[in-house]
Amino acid sequence: MSIETRGIVKRFGNFVALDDVDLNVDSGRLTALLGPSGGGKSTLLRIIGGLETPDAGTVRIANVEATGVPAQRRNVGFVFQHYAAFKHLSVYRNVAFGLEIRKRPKDEIRKRVMELLELVHLEQFADRLPAQLSGGQRQRMALARALAVEPSVLLLDEPFGALDAKVRRELRDWLRRLHDDVHVTTVFVTHDQEEALEVSDEIVVINHGRIEQVGSPSDLYDKPANDFVMEFLGPVTRLGGALVRPHDLEIFTEHVDNAVEAEVIRLQRIGFEVRAEFRTKDEQPWAQLTRGQAEALELRPGNRVWVRPVG
Amino acid sequence: MADTLPPRLGSSRSKWTLRLIALGYISVIVLVPLYVIFYKTISEGWSTFWAAISSDEAVTAMRLSAECAVASVILNTILGIGLALLLTRYRFRGRRLLGALADLPISVSPIVVGLALVLVYSSTSGWFGKHLDFQVIFALPGMIMATTFVSLPLMLRELVPVLEESGDDMEQAARVLGASGWQQFIRITVPTIRAALAYGIVLTLARSIGEFGAVRIVSGNVQGSGQTQTLPLLIDDKYTNFEPGPYQLSMVLILVTIVAIALTSLRRSKEHA
Image (cartoon, rainbow over all chains, first blue to last red; front, top):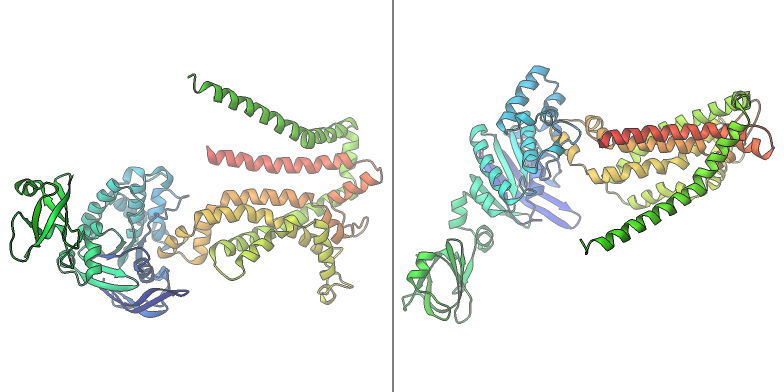
């Protein structure tokens, strides 16, 4: 089911959170809303979910006008950063909540809830309370709860933001696989570019309440529309006044065309890569090299080299 | 070991000193007076006890106290939840002022509360009371109002911190899952505040049963037919007129409060287990 917003404006007092935002999310895709905090991406997600009302603009979900429809009747699944687990209900009852509200028959609920608990690998925890689960388990429960009502779209607000790095990585892979199985149109908010690049089919970069660029992860990485997108999506350094990716720099030990003369200031090994810092006449670029490259060039601090962007 | 021993000794010594001070303090202001009342009640014999609590005026006083207390507990539950939700879930101009006002009854003398109610609701001279065709002051409605007023902050002080701490994420999640406002309240909010609500009800109940000052003013302390004398007022009367019974009646009040507080602490320890 597709999502479409037109001309969304949202202000909080004098602060403009969203400024005339048009967004298209195609059916069945996994889309990331990526941007720095305070950029408006969560507000946009909450407007799509009906938890926030826009000051202007329209929202359509599955080609149906949804702007004035209350959250209860939008049939969306929403996952919150801090899980919003119903603390007084068991894992089973948490997942069953939406179905109980919809007054589905008991055995249908039982069947559906057990299916979902299996999907999120929590079937043996059905009788536990949320307080007895780890953060990652709670978030998987929240996902099962959101999916239980067969939502037309699934919205996740910084779903892994409160988890530690390792669990976050596991859940990220798992979300990707889950989406490949379930195929529900999914939009998730993140400020972590790595997460967006790794998981999503499409990334929407949002900053200062505006959409900066929309595209596939590789499009955005290779053909950023502006310096902001380039800086936000990966490491950058400055050479000859232009932004370049540090792994897109070539180093030579003698003069070549278009290269800038530089002095090696510092070499730092980080695992398999070597980070080389240079000083040119008026800049201090750095390059990301493999160990092999660094050794072949016999780089030492104080060496004179020539640096130029690839291509 | 040598490093940790001295501070541990010191801390245990200060722990014992603190315990002694606390125990001494509680003995002087709570335990000894309670014991005296208990002793007086027992020493005057069971027949005196029975006579004191079964007289017509005592039974009516207990009934009035119970009616006042039950009514104000019900009102406080409804008003308390409503006001607590308003103060924690909504942002509006004057919210802080409203919060401070709601806390006022605890710091203002109950006598002042009573007088204020008389000024407003008195059927002869009150601003508002003049236009009502039923009696508020010197009658049950005024007594209930006074009791509710002085005990409302106790309920709020239990509910507001719990609501603030839990936030409204759960309600939002329920909303997206299709729950109406009422369903969110019954299925999510009420279970979240249940323990605090129970404790708030007990505190309000204890305060309502024992309320003296405000009720004294608005009730007029009428005896005999049309009695508006509640249990605390009756105790005061007996005591100042050297009539028999004040200790026995006090014992009743104390027992009710102890039972109420014991019930909640039982609940609390069960929830923590």
